[in-house]
Length: 287
Length: 285
Image (cartoon, rainbow over all chains, first blue to last red; front, top):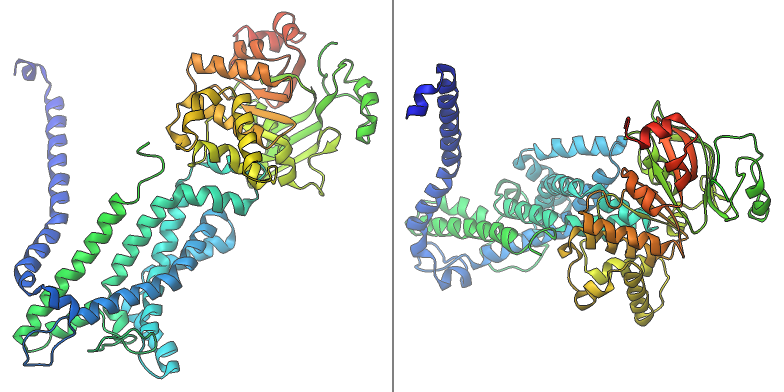
Protein backbone atom coordinates (compact mmCIF):
# COMPACT_ATOMS: atom_id res chain seq x y z
CA UNK A 1 0.00 0.00 0.00
CA UNK A 2 2.66 2.45 0.99
CA UNK A 3 4.80 0.78 -1.68
CA UNK A 4 2.10 1.54 -4.21
CA UNK A 5 2.55 5.20 -3.60
CA UNK A 6 6.17 4.84 -4.58
CA UNK A 7 5.24 3.23 -7.88
CA UNK A 8 5.34 5.45 -10.85
CA UNK A 9 2.41 5.75 -13.17
CA UNK A 10 4.36 3.73 -15.72
CA UNK A 11 4.99 0.88 -13.30
CA UNK A 12 1.37 0.72 -12.38
CA UNK A 13 0.33 0.66 -16.00
CA UNK A 14 2.73 -2.23 -16.62
CA UNK A 15 1.33 -4.17 -13.73
CA UNK A 16 -2.25 -3.71 -14.75
CA UNK A 17 -1.47 -4.57 -18.37
CA UNK A 18 0.17 -7.74 -17.13
CA UNK A 19 -2.85 -8.60 -15.04
CA UNK A 20 -5.26 -7.94 -17.89
CA UNK A 21 -3.32 -10.13 -20.30
CA UNK A 22 -3.01 -12.96 -17.80
CA UNK A 23 -6.74 -12.80 -17.15
CA UNK A 24 -7.59 -12.76 -20.84
CA UNK A 25 -5.45 -15.76 -21.68
CA UNK A 26 -6.77 -17.57 -18.61
CA UNK A 27 -10.34 -16.97 -19.78
CA UNK A 28 -9.40 -18.17 -23.26
CA UNK A 29 -7.93 -21.32 -21.76
CA UNK A 30 -11.13 -21.97 -19.84
CA UNK A 31 -13.29 -21.29 -22.90
CA UNK A 32 -11.48 -23.99 -24.87
CA UNK A 33 -12.48 -26.68 -22.42
CA UNK A 34 -16.04 -25.43 -21.94
CA UNK A 35 -17.32 -27.28 -25.04
CA UNK A 36 -15.88 -30.54 -23.75
CA UNK A 37 -17.60 -30.09 -20.42
CA UNK A 38 -20.90 -29.20 -22.10
CA UNK A 39 -20.66 -32.12 -24.52
CA UNK A 40 -19.91 -34.56 -21.74
CA UNK A 41 -22.74 -33.18 -19.62
CA UNK A 42 -25.22 -33.38 -22.46
CA UNK A 43 -24.14 -36.88 -23.49
CA UNK A 44 -24.32 -38.11 -19.93
CA UNK A 45 -27.85 -36.78 -19.39
CA UNK A 46 -29.13 -37.89 -22.77
CA UNK A 47 -27.24 -41.12 -23.32
CA UNK A 48 -26.32 -42.67 -20.00
CA UNK A 49 -29.78 -44.14 -19.43
CA UNK A 50 -29.50 -46.21 -22.61
CA UNK A 51 -26.13 -47.68 -21.78
CA UNK A 52 -26.47 -51.16 -20.39
CA UNK A 53 -25.14 -54.61 -21.08
CA UNK A 54 -27.44 -54.95 -24.10
CA UNK A 55 -25.90 -51.93 -25.70
CA UNK A 56 -22.60 -53.77 -25.97
CA UNK A 57 -23.89 -57.30 -26.56
CA UNK A 58 -26.91 -56.83 -28.84
CA UNK A 59 -27.16 -55.73 -32.40
CA UNK A 60 -29.77 -53.14 -33.40
CA UNK A 61 -33.35 -54.23 -33.02
CA UNK A 62 -35.77 -53.74 -35.93
CA UNK A 63 -37.75 -50.53 -35.93
CA UNK A 64 -40.61 -50.53 -33.48
CA UNK A 65 -39.13 -53.27 -31.38
CA UNK A 66 -37.84 -52.44 -27.92
CA UNK A 67 -34.28 -53.06 -26.83
CA UNK A 68 -31.34 -53.87 -29.03
CA UNK A 69 -27.88 -52.39 -28.89
CA UNK A 70 -24.88 -51.41 -30.87
CA UNK A 71 -22.51 -54.21 -30.05
CA UNK A 72 -21.85 -54.87 -33.70
CA UNK A 73 -20.93 -51.22 -34.27
CA UNK A 74 -18.54 -51.23 -31.31
CA UNK A 75 -16.94 -54.35 -32.74
CA UNK A 76 -16.93 -52.80 -36.20
CA UNK A 77 -15.14 -49.70 -34.99
CA UNK A 78 -12.53 -51.83 -33.25
CA UNK A 79 -11.98 -53.87 -36.42
CA UNK A 80 -11.83 -50.80 -38.65
CA UNK A 81 -9.35 -49.04 -36.39
CA UNK A 82 -7.37 -52.27 -36.14
CA UNK A 83 -7.16 -52.58 -39.92
CA UNK A 84 -6.20 -48.91 -40.21
CA UNK A 85 -3.49 -49.35 -37.58
CA UNK A 86 -2.10 -52.51 -39.20
CA UNK A 87 -1.95 -50.84 -42.61
CA UNK A 88 -1.06 -47.31 -41.67
CA UNK A 89 1.16 -47.36 -38.60
CA UNK A 90 4.20 -49.22 -39.96
CA UNK A 91 4.28 -46.94 -42.98
CA UNK A 92 3.68 -43.79 -40.96
CA UNK A 93 6.29 -44.55 -38.30
CA UNK A 94 8.81 -45.52 -40.95
CA UNK A 95 8.09 -42.35 -42.90
CA UNK A 96 8.42 -40.27 -39.74
CA UNK A 97 11.79 -41.85 -38.98
CA UNK A 98 12.90 -41.09 -42.50
CA UNK A 99 11.82 -37.47 -42.30
CA UNK A 100 13.74 -37.02 -39.07
CA UNK A 101 16.85 -38.92 -40.11
CA UNK A 102 17.14 -37.72 -43.69
CA UNK A 103 16.69 -34.15 -42.60
CA UNK A 104 17.46 -31.70 -45.35
CA UNK A 105 17.23 -34.19 -48.19
CA UNK A 106 14.98 -33.20 -51.06
CA UNK A 107 12.84 -36.28 -50.73
CA UNK A 108 12.30 -35.60 -47.03
CA UNK A 109 11.33 -32.00 -47.66
CA UNK A 110 8.93 -33.02 -50.40
CA UNK A 111 7.36 -35.76 -48.30
CA UNK A 112 7.02 -33.44 -45.32
CA UNK A 113 5.24 -30.86 -47.42
CA UNK A 114 2.94 -33.48 -48.94
CA UNK A 115 2.03 -34.99 -45.58
CA UNK A 116 1.03 -31.51 -44.45
CA UNK A 117 -1.16 -31.23 -47.52
CA UNK A 118 -2.58 -34.67 -46.78
CA UNK A 119 -3.41 -33.59 -43.27
CA UNK A 120 -5.64 -30.93 -44.76
CA UNK A 121 -7.57 -33.21 -47.11
CA UNK A 122 -11.22 -33.30 -46.03
CA UNK A 123 -12.09 -36.75 -44.79
CA UNK A 124 -15.05 -37.01 -47.13
CA UNK A 125 -12.61 -36.68 -50.04
CA UNK A 126 -10.60 -39.57 -48.67
CA UNK A 127 -13.83 -41.56 -48.51
CA UNK A 128 -14.69 -40.81 -52.13
CA UNK A 129 -11.17 -41.65 -53.24
CA UNK A 130 -11.20 -45.02 -51.53
CA UNK A 131 -14.67 -45.67 -52.91
CA UNK A 132 -13.46 -45.01 -56.45
CA UNK A 133 -10.32 -47.08 -56.14
CA UNK A 134 -11.20 -49.92 -53.80
CA UNK A 135 -14.95 -50.21 -53.32
CA UNK A 136 -15.62 -50.09 -57.03
CA UNK A 137 -12.76 -52.47 -57.77
CA UNK A 138 -13.84 -54.94 -55.08
CA UNK A 139 -17.46 -54.67 -56.18
CA UNK A 140 -18.86 -53.58 -52.84
CA UNK A 141 -18.43 -51.91 -49.50
CA UNK A 142 -16.07 -53.63 -47.11
CA UNK A 143 -14.35 -53.33 -43.75
CA UNK A 144 -11.07 -53.41 -45.64
CA UNK A 145 -12.02 -50.34 -47.67
CA UNK A 146 -13.06 -48.56 -44.50
CA UNK A 147 -9.79 -49.50 -42.84
CA UNK A 148 -7.84 -48.20 -45.82
CA UNK A 149 -9.71 -44.90 -45.65
CA UNK A 150 -8.93 -44.55 -41.95
CA UNK A 151 -5.32 -45.56 -42.58
CA UNK A 152 -5.01 -42.73 -45.09
CA UNK A 153 -6.33 -40.34 -42.44
CA UNK A 154 -3.81 -41.79 -40.00
CA UNK A 155 -0.74 -41.51 -42.20
CA UNK A 156 0.02 -37.79 -42.08
CA UNK A 157 -0.81 -37.45 -38.41
CA UNK A 158 1.43 -40.27 -37.24
CA UNK A 159 4.19 -39.45 -39.71
CA UNK A 160 4.53 -35.93 -38.43
CA UNK A 161 4.28 -36.78 -34.72
CA UNK A 162 6.87 -39.54 -35.20
CA UNK A 163 9.16 -37.08 -36.92
CA UNK A 164 8.72 -34.48 -34.19
CA UNK A 165 9.33 -36.99 -31.43
CA UNK A 166 12.43 -38.45 -33.08
CA UNK A 167 13.77 -34.95 -33.52
CA UNK A 168 13.43 -34.37 -29.80
CA UNK A 169 15.89 -37.18 -29.07
CA UNK A 170 19.13 -35.50 -28.04
CA UNK A 171 21.78 -35.52 -30.72
CA UNK A 172 24.26 -36.83 -28.16
CA UNK A 173 22.29 -40.05 -27.86
CA UNK A 174 22.49 -40.72 -31.58
CA UNK A 175 26.18 -39.85 -31.60
CA UNK A 176 26.69 -42.17 -28.65
CA UNK A 177 25.43 -45.07 -30.73
CA UNK A 178 27.40 -44.14 -33.82
CA UNK A 179 30.56 -43.64 -31.77
CA UNK A 180 30.24 -47.23 -30.58
CA UNK A 181 30.45 -48.39 -34.16
CA UNK A 182 26.75 -48.93 -34.74
CA UNK A 183 25.41 -48.54 -38.21
CA UNK A 184 22.97 -45.79 -38.87
CA UNK A 185 19.92 -48.05 -38.98
CA UNK A 186 20.84 -49.80 -35.76
CA UNK A 187 21.37 -46.50 -34.03
CA UNK A 188 18.00 -45.34 -35.27
CA UNK A 189 16.05 -48.49 -34.45
CA UNK A 190 17.95 -49.55 -31.33
CA UNK A 191 18.57 -46.25 -29.61
CA UNK A 192 16.71 -43.32 -31.14
CA UNK A 193 13.38 -45.06 -31.62
CA UNK A 194 13.23 -46.47 -28.07
CA UNK A 195 14.14 -43.06 -26.71
CA UNK A 196 11.29 -41.50 -28.64
CA UNK A 197 8.94 -44.40 -27.94
CA UNK A 198 6.63 -42.79 -25.44
CA UNK A 199 6.07 -39.71 -27.56
CA UNK A 200 5.43 -41.77 -30.67
CA UNK A 201 3.01 -44.07 -28.85
CA UNK A 202 1.14 -41.09 -27.48
CA UNK A 203 0.88 -39.67 -30.98
CA UNK A 204 -0.35 -43.01 -32.29
CA UNK A 205 -3.02 -43.32 -29.63
CA UNK A 206 -4.26 -39.79 -30.22
CA UNK A 207 -4.39 -40.43 -33.96
CA UNK A 208 -6.24 -43.74 -33.46
CA UNK A 209 -8.73 -42.00 -31.20
CA UNK A 210 -9.30 -39.37 -33.84
CA UNK A 211 -9.90 -41.75 -36.72
CA UNK A 212 -12.14 -43.90 -34.53
CA UNK A 213 -14.56 -40.97 -34.55
CA UNK A 214 -14.47 -40.38 -38.30
CA UNK A 215 -17.78 -40.75 -40.10
CA UNK A 216 -17.33 -39.33 -43.57
CA UNK A 217 -14.62 -41.70 -44.84
CA UNK A 218 -16.70 -44.70 -43.78
CA UNK A 219 -19.95 -43.69 -45.49
CA UNK A 220 -18.58 -44.64 -48.91
CA UNK A 221 -16.33 -47.47 -47.82
CA UNK A 222 -17.44 -49.57 -44.87
CA UNK A 223 -21.05 -48.37 -45.13
CA UNK A 224 -23.38 -50.00 -42.60
CA UNK A 225 -24.30 -53.44 -41.45
CA UNK A 226 -27.09 -54.26 -39.01
CA UNK A 227 -25.56 -57.64 -38.26
CA UNK A 228 -22.46 -58.87 -36.50
CA UNK A 229 -19.59 -59.11 -38.92
CA UNK A 230 -16.00 -60.20 -38.58
CA UNK A 231 -15.31 -60.26 -42.26
CA UNK A 232 -12.96 -57.78 -43.86
CA UNK A 233 -14.65 -58.18 -47.22
CA UNK A 234 -18.18 -57.48 -45.99
CA UNK A 235 -19.61 -54.11 -45.16
CA UNK A 236 -19.37 -53.38 -41.48
CA UNK A 237 -21.02 -51.17 -38.89
CA UNK A 238 -19.12 -48.44 -37.07
CA UNK A 239 -20.15 -46.27 -34.15
CA UNK A 240 -19.89 -42.87 -35.83
CA UNK A 241 -21.83 -43.99 -38.88
CA UNK A 242 -24.42 -45.61 -36.64
CA UNK A 243 -24.76 -42.36 -34.71
CA UNK A 244 -25.29 -40.50 -37.95
CA UNK A 245 -27.99 -42.89 -39.11
CA UNK A 246 -29.80 -43.13 -35.80
CA UNK A 247 -29.68 -39.42 -35.03
CA UNK A 248 -31.24 -38.59 -38.40
CA UNK A 249 -33.93 -41.25 -38.11
CA UNK A 250 -37.47 -40.39 -37.06
CA UNK A 251 -37.56 -42.84 -34.16
CA UNK A 252 -37.34 -41.74 -30.53
CA UNK A 253 -35.73 -45.01 -29.44
CA UNK A 254 -32.99 -44.65 -32.06
CA UNK A 255 -32.30 -41.09 -30.94
CA UNK A 256 -31.64 -42.36 -27.44
CA UNK A 257 -29.32 -45.03 -28.77
CA UNK A 258 -27.47 -42.45 -30.86
CA UNK A 259 -26.82 -40.41 -27.72
CA UNK A 260 -25.62 -43.49 -25.95
CA UNK A 261 -23.36 -44.38 -28.86
CA UNK A 262 -21.92 -40.89 -28.86
CA UNK A 263 -21.20 -41.23 -25.17
CA UNK A 264 -19.47 -44.59 -25.73
CA UNK A 265 -17.44 -43.17 -28.58
CA UNK A 266 -16.25 -40.20 -26.59
CA UNK A 267 -15.61 -42.51 -23.66
CA UNK A 268 -13.36 -44.63 -25.86
CA UNK A 269 -11.48 -41.57 -27.03
CA UNK A 270 -11.09 -40.31 -23.46
CA UNK A 271 -9.92 -43.71 -22.28
CA UNK A 272 -7.30 -43.85 -25.01
CA UNK A 273 -6.12 -40.34 -24.21
CA UNK A 274 -5.84 -41.19 -20.54
CA UNK A 275 -3.97 -44.36 -21.39
CA UNK A 276 -1.60 -42.31 -23.51
CA UNK A 277 -1.02 -40.08 -20.51
CA UNK A 278 -0.59 -42.58 -17.75
CA UNK A 279 0.48 -45.90 -19.21
CA UNK A 280 3.34 -44.62 -21.26
CA UNK A 281 5.86 -42.63 -19.39
CA UNK A 282 8.92 -41.05 -20.82
CA UNK A 283 12.10 -43.02 -20.16
CA UNK A 284 13.58 -39.76 -18.98
CA UNK A 285 11.11 -39.33 -16.15
CA UNK A 286 10.18 -41.30 -13.08
CA UNK A 287 13.43 -43.00 -12.32
CA UNK B 1 61.78 -38.08 -25.03
CA UNK B 2 60.44 -34.66 -25.79
CA UNK B 3 57.26 -33.35 -27.32
CA UNK B 4 54.93 -35.60 -29.23
CA UNK B 5 55.19 -33.68 -32.45
CA UNK B 6 55.86 -30.30 -33.92
CA UNK B 7 54.05 -28.18 -36.44
CA UNK B 8 53.80 -28.77 -40.13
CA UNK B 9 56.98 -30.08 -41.59
CA UNK B 10 58.19 -31.15 -44.95
CA UNK B 11 58.44 -34.78 -44.03
CA UNK B 12 57.29 -37.43 -46.43
CA UNK B 13 54.27 -39.32 -45.12
CA UNK B 14 55.08 -42.78 -43.96
CA UNK B 15 53.77 -45.37 -46.34
CA UNK B 16 52.74 -48.24 -44.19
CA UNK B 17 52.56 -49.33 -40.59
CA UNK B 18 55.74 -51.27 -41.11
CA UNK B 19 57.59 -48.02 -41.61
CA UNK B 20 56.35 -46.45 -38.46
CA UNK B 21 59.48 -46.84 -36.35
CA UNK B 22 61.41 -44.84 -38.95
CA UNK B 23 58.72 -42.28 -39.39
CA UNK B 24 58.65 -41.68 -35.67
CA UNK B 25 62.24 -40.60 -35.94
CA UNK B 26 61.58 -38.38 -38.91
CA UNK B 27 61.62 -34.60 -38.64
CA UNK B 28 58.43 -33.28 -37.17
CA UNK B 29 58.44 -36.18 -34.81
CA UNK B 30 61.81 -35.36 -33.42
CA UNK B 31 61.10 -37.32 -30.27
CA UNK B 32 58.93 -40.04 -28.96
CA UNK B 33 60.26 -43.28 -27.93
CA UNK B 34 56.57 -44.04 -27.70
CA UNK B 35 54.89 -45.47 -30.76
CA UNK B 36 52.40 -43.12 -32.32
CA UNK B 37 48.77 -44.14 -32.23
CA UNK B 38 47.19 -41.25 -34.08
CA UNK B 39 48.93 -39.09 -36.62
CA UNK B 40 47.42 -36.09 -38.33
CA UNK B 41 49.21 -34.75 -41.31
CA UNK B 42 48.39 -31.37 -42.85
CA UNK B 43 44.82 -31.93 -41.81
CA UNK B 44 42.38 -29.16 -42.61
CA UNK B 45 38.66 -29.09 -42.10
CA UNK B 46 35.84 -26.90 -43.34
CA UNK B 47 32.27 -26.35 -42.22
CA UNK B 48 30.80 -25.08 -45.45
CA UNK B 49 33.01 -22.15 -46.36
CA UNK B 50 34.47 -21.75 -42.89
CA UNK B 51 37.85 -23.25 -42.29
CA UNK B 52 37.88 -24.72 -38.82
CA UNK B 53 41.24 -26.48 -38.93
CA UNK B 54 44.29 -25.34 -40.78
CA UNK B 55 47.03 -27.81 -41.68
CA UNK B 56 47.19 -29.65 -38.41
CA UNK B 57 50.12 -32.00 -38.05
CA UNK B 58 50.12 -33.78 -34.77
CA UNK B 59 51.27 -37.11 -33.44
CA UNK B 60 49.50 -38.72 -30.52
CA UNK B 61 51.69 -41.31 -28.80
CA UNK B 62 50.34 -44.66 -27.78
CA UNK B 63 49.24 -45.27 -24.22
CA UNK B 64 49.64 -41.67 -23.23
CA UNK B 65 47.16 -38.95 -22.49
CA UNK B 66 47.23 -36.09 -24.94
CA UNK B 67 45.24 -33.02 -24.00
CA UNK B 68 43.89 -30.59 -26.59
CA UNK B 69 43.46 -27.13 -25.11
CA UNK B 70 42.52 -23.75 -26.46
CA UNK B 71 39.78 -21.15 -26.31
CA UNK B 72 36.24 -21.84 -27.53
CA UNK B 73 36.03 -22.20 -31.28
CA UNK B 74 39.73 -22.95 -31.67
CA UNK B 75 39.04 -26.25 -33.42
CA UNK B 76 40.07 -28.69 -30.71
CA UNK B 77 36.71 -30.47 -30.63
CA UNK B 78 36.54 -30.45 -34.40
CA UNK B 79 39.92 -32.12 -34.49
CA UNK B 80 38.86 -34.70 -31.92
CA UNK B 81 35.70 -35.49 -33.83
CA UNK B 82 37.70 -35.80 -37.04
CA UNK B 83 39.63 -38.72 -35.60
CA UNK B 84 36.58 -40.99 -35.51
CA UNK B 85 34.84 -39.11 -38.29
CA UNK B 86 31.91 -37.99 -36.20
CA UNK B 87 31.98 -34.81 -38.25
CA UNK B 88 30.78 -36.85 -41.20
CA UNK B 89 27.31 -36.49 -39.71
CA UNK B 90 27.32 -32.77 -40.35
CA UNK B 91 26.26 -31.81 -43.84
CA UNK B 92 28.49 -29.56 -45.90
CA UNK B 93 31.81 -30.42 -44.28
CA UNK B 94 35.00 -31.37 -46.07
CA UNK B 95 38.59 -32.04 -45.20
CA UNK B 96 42.06 -32.07 -46.66
CA UNK B 97 45.13 -33.97 -45.54
CA UNK B 98 44.92 -37.13 -43.55
CA UNK B 99 44.65 -38.68 -40.13
CA UNK B 100 46.14 -42.12 -39.54
CA UNK B 101 45.52 -44.53 -36.73
CA UNK B 102 48.36 -46.99 -36.35
CA UNK B 103 49.37 -46.09 -39.85
CA UNK B 104 46.02 -46.71 -41.47
CA UNK B 105 44.25 -43.76 -42.99
CA UNK B 106 40.97 -42.78 -41.40
CA UNK B 107 39.75 -40.97 -44.49
CA UNK B 108 40.71 -43.54 -47.07
CA UNK B 109 37.76 -44.17 -49.40
CA UNK B 110 37.89 -47.85 -48.50
CA UNK B 111 37.58 -47.23 -44.77
CA UNK B 112 34.47 -48.58 -43.12
CA UNK B 113 33.42 -45.85 -40.71
CA UNK B 114 31.65 -48.40 -38.56
CA UNK B 115 34.84 -50.41 -38.16
CA UNK B 116 36.79 -47.25 -37.47
CA UNK B 117 34.47 -46.21 -34.67
CA UNK B 118 34.72 -49.62 -33.07
CA UNK B 119 38.44 -49.02 -32.69
CA UNK B 120 38.10 -45.45 -31.55
CA UNK B 121 35.85 -45.04 -28.55
CA UNK B 122 34.34 -41.69 -27.66
CA UNK B 123 33.09 -40.07 -24.49
CA UNK B 124 31.03 -36.94 -24.86
CA UNK B 125 30.76 -33.70 -22.97
CA UNK B 126 27.22 -34.41 -21.96
CA UNK B 127 26.85 -37.90 -20.59
CA UNK B 128 24.57 -39.77 -22.96
CA UNK B 129 23.62 -43.16 -21.55
CA UNK B 130 21.02 -44.98 -23.60
CA UNK B 131 17.57 -45.17 -22.07
CA UNK B 132 18.25 -48.78 -21.10
CA UNK B 133 19.42 -50.64 -18.05
CA UNK B 134 22.94 -50.16 -16.72
CA UNK B 135 23.83 -53.66 -17.89
CA UNK B 136 22.42 -53.13 -21.37
CA UNK B 137 24.20 -49.83 -21.78
CA UNK B 138 27.52 -51.62 -21.49
CA UNK B 139 26.47 -54.87 -23.12
CA UNK B 140 24.72 -53.35 -26.13
CA UNK B 141 27.86 -52.28 -27.95
CA UNK B 142 29.69 -55.50 -27.20
CA UNK B 143 26.73 -57.55 -28.37
CA UNK B 144 26.12 -55.58 -31.54
CA UNK B 145 29.76 -55.60 -32.46
CA UNK B 146 29.97 -59.34 -31.95
CA UNK B 147 32.61 -59.11 -29.23
CA UNK B 148 30.86 -61.45 -26.85
CA UNK B 149 29.62 -64.93 -27.64
CA UNK B 150 27.01 -65.97 -25.16
CA UNK B 151 25.68 -64.60 -21.96
CA UNK B 152 28.54 -65.53 -19.68
CA UNK B 153 31.15 -63.92 -21.81
CA UNK B 154 28.96 -60.84 -22.03
CA UNK B 155 28.57 -60.78 -18.25
CA UNK B 156 32.33 -60.88 -18.01
CA UNK B 157 32.80 -58.00 -20.42
CA UNK B 158 30.20 -55.91 -18.63
CA UNK B 159 31.82 -56.48 -15.26
CA UNK B 160 35.33 -55.86 -16.54
CA UNK B 161 34.31 -52.68 -18.34
CA UNK B 162 32.46 -51.36 -15.31
CA UNK B 163 35.45 -52.15 -13.11
CA UNK B 164 37.80 -50.45 -15.54
CA UNK B 165 35.57 -47.40 -15.44
CA UNK B 166 35.66 -47.49 -11.62
CA UNK B 167 31.92 -47.70 -11.26
CA UNK B 168 31.38 -51.42 -10.65
CA UNK B 169 31.07 -51.15 -6.87
CA UNK B 170 28.43 -48.46 -7.19
CA UNK B 171 26.20 -50.27 -9.68
CA UNK B 172 26.80 -54.00 -9.23
CA UNK B 173 23.61 -54.43 -7.21
CA UNK B 174 21.40 -52.60 -9.64
CA UNK B 175 22.61 -53.60 -13.07
CA UNK B 176 19.05 -54.06 -14.26
CA UNK B 177 17.96 -50.58 -13.25
CA UNK B 178 17.77 -47.73 -15.72
CA UNK B 179 21.01 -45.94 -16.40
CA UNK B 180 19.14 -42.66 -16.33
CA UNK B 181 18.74 -42.97 -12.58
CA UNK B 182 22.47 -42.56 -12.03
CA UNK B 183 24.08 -39.27 -11.05
CA UNK B 184 25.83 -37.20 -13.70
CA UNK B 185 29.27 -38.40 -12.69
CA UNK B 186 28.14 -42.02 -12.59
CA UNK B 187 26.50 -41.65 -15.99
CA UNK B 188 29.74 -40.32 -17.40
CA UNK B 189 31.73 -43.24 -16.01
CA UNK B 190 29.07 -45.59 -17.35
CA UNK B 191 29.57 -44.03 -20.77
CA UNK B 192 33.29 -44.67 -20.40
CA UNK B 193 32.56 -48.29 -19.51
CA UNK B 194 30.30 -48.51 -22.53
CA UNK B 195 33.10 -47.28 -24.76
CA UNK B 196 35.61 -49.68 -23.19
CA UNK B 197 33.32 -52.67 -23.68
CA UNK B 198 33.80 -52.42 -27.44
CA UNK B 199 37.55 -52.78 -26.81
CA UNK B 200 38.85 -49.74 -28.65
CA UNK B 201 42.52 -48.82 -29.09
CA UNK B 202 42.00 -45.12 -28.77
CA UNK B 203 39.66 -43.27 -26.45
CA UNK B 204 38.52 -39.79 -27.40
CA UNK B 205 37.12 -37.62 -24.63
CA UNK B 206 35.35 -34.39 -25.42
CA UNK B 207 35.37 -32.34 -22.22
CA UNK B 208 34.24 -35.38 -20.25
CA UNK B 209 34.12 -33.61 -16.91
CA UNK B 210 32.95 -30.15 -17.85
CA UNK B 211 29.41 -30.77 -16.65
CA UNK B 212 30.45 -32.47 -13.41
CA UNK B 213 31.04 -31.29 -9.87
CA UNK B 214 34.60 -31.30 -8.47
CA UNK B 215 34.35 -34.68 -6.80
CA UNK B 216 32.94 -36.41 -9.85
CA UNK B 217 35.57 -34.62 -11.91
CA UNK B 218 38.31 -35.94 -9.69
CA UNK B 219 37.01 -39.47 -10.15
CA UNK B 220 37.04 -39.08 -13.92
CA UNK B 221 40.58 -37.72 -13.80
CA UNK B 222 41.80 -40.59 -11.65
CA UNK B 223 40.12 -42.92 -14.08
CA UNK B 224 41.88 -41.34 -17.04
CA UNK B 225 45.16 -41.86 -15.23
CA UNK B 226 44.34 -45.54 -14.75
CA UNK B 227 43.17 -46.05 -18.29
CA UNK B 228 46.26 -44.81 -20.02
CA UNK B 229 48.11 -47.99 -19.17
CA UNK B 230 45.87 -49.74 -21.69
CA UNK B 231 44.54 -47.03 -23.98
CA UNK B 232 45.68 -44.07 -25.97
CA UNK B 233 43.63 -41.16 -24.75
CA UNK B 234 42.96 -37.86 -26.45
CA UNK B 235 41.08 -35.43 -24.26
CA UNK B 236 39.65 -32.03 -25.09
CA UNK B 237 39.41 -29.81 -22.08
CA UNK B 238 38.64 -26.22 -21.26
CA UNK B 239 40.19 -26.63 -17.89
CA UNK B 240 43.91 -26.03 -17.97
CA UNK B 241 44.50 -27.39 -14.51
CA UNK B 242 42.84 -30.55 -15.69
CA UNK B 243 45.11 -30.73 -18.72
CA UNK B 244 48.09 -30.22 -16.44
CA UNK B 245 46.91 -32.93 -14.05
CA UNK B 246 45.92 -35.70 -16.41
CA UNK B 247 47.92 -35.37 -19.59
CA UNK B 248 51.39 -36.37 -20.68
CA UNK B 249 51.29 -34.21 -23.78
CA UNK B 250 49.43 -31.02 -24.45
CA UNK B 251 48.50 -29.47 -27.77
CA UNK B 252 47.43 -25.85 -27.84
CA UNK B 253 44.98 -24.91 -30.58
CA UNK B 254 44.16 -21.38 -31.50
CA UNK B 255 41.89 -20.20 -34.31
CA UNK B 256 42.11 -23.46 -36.17
CA UNK B 257 45.87 -23.73 -35.91
CA UNK B 258 47.98 -26.01 -33.82
CA UNK B 259 50.16 -23.44 -32.10
CA UNK B 260 52.31 -25.69 -30.02
CA UNK B 261 52.49 -29.23 -28.79
CA UNK B 262 54.83 -30.84 -26.34
CA UNK B 263 55.21 -32.54 -23.03
CA UNK B 264 52.66 -31.13 -20.67
CA UNK B 265 55.13 -29.96 -18.05
CA UNK B 266 57.12 -28.13 -20.70
CA UNK B 267 54.06 -26.51 -22.24
CA UNK B 268 52.88 -25.32 -18.87
CA UNK B 269 56.21 -24.15 -17.51
CA UNK B 270 58.25 -23.15 -20.51
CA UNK B 271 56.20 -22.79 -23.67
CA UNK B 272 57.95 -21.76 -26.84
CA UNK B 273 55.16 -19.64 -28.20
CA UNK B 274 53.99 -16.39 -26.68
CA UNK B 275 50.40 -17.20 -27.53
CA UNK B 276 50.61 -20.43 -25.58
CA UNK B 277 51.99 -18.66 -22.57
CA UNK B 278 49.38 -15.93 -22.85
CA UNK B 279 46.62 -18.53 -22.91
CA UNK B 280 47.83 -20.75 -20.10
CA UNK B 281 48.52 -17.80 -17.86
CA UNK B 282 44.98 -16.61 -18.47
CA UNK B 283 45.72 -13.48 -20.44
CA UNK B 284 43.14 -14.44 -23.05
CA UNK B 285 40.70 -17.19 -23.86
